Structures are given as structure tokens and as C-alpha cells.
Image (cartoon, rainbow, N blue to C red; front, side):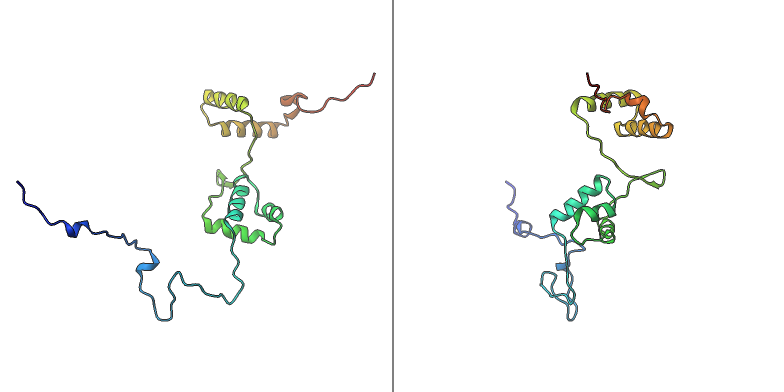
Length: 159
């Protein structure tokens, strides 16, 4: 029979200390602990989680900082919004080194399925498929040729 080994040293609970944890660093003279409350000499304003989420949502929808400032209408400036984007590390959408805007397109399940199938036949992503169509229509002024009065109201003729 194997000898019994005392594993009490291995059985104790150990806590992992991360290199950037504030609790693992000694406090300097006059410094407060990281959880202590303090009163700032200037008004310290912070955004709620809901406001952060809303700004992130609007950013993802393609709105500019000026448009978000106008939508929020709570005194937040466009510069503050841009600063938050930098602090959050949000990637700015670019195409060939140029800043671009993401514009969501509302599609039902049926048209979305057709779009995905058609884009797969061409060998590109659905959003790239739509981008190419839009750029072609805008560059060659093909709106009337493409929609063919499908969405525009028809004039009512009286009898």
C-alpha cells in the first residue's frame, strides 16, 4: 500500500494576483486605497451604463458625433462623444483608408435570404453585394431604371 502523503500545503486556497491589480501595489505616502471615496475639486460627471450603451448603439448605426449630440440633447458635446470613442477604443470604419459610414438596411427574412443566396453565388458577403449595387446606382444615376416606379406612389386619375 502506498504511503500516505500530507497534502495540506497543496490543499489551501490560493488567490491569483494579477500584475495590474491595484490591491497588489503598495500605497505611496498620502495615497488613498483604490476603493476609497473622495470628493473631486471640480464637478465629476459620469455617464450611466444606459447612456454608454445608447451612444455605442447610435455609433454602430452610423451616426456622426454631431448627430449623436443632437439626438441626446442633454448638454453632451460632440467632442465629448469623440473622446469617449477614443477611450473605448472603438474602431472607425474605413474603406481603402477613407473614413466611411455604416448604414443599416432593414430587410425582411425573405429578401435577406435571397440576398445571402445571390451574394454567395457571386462569392462575396451580403453587405459588400449591397455596397456594390448602391455605388453603381449612385455613380451611373440608375435609380429610375432600377426601381421602375415600384416604390413611388402612382398618380391618382379621377373618373
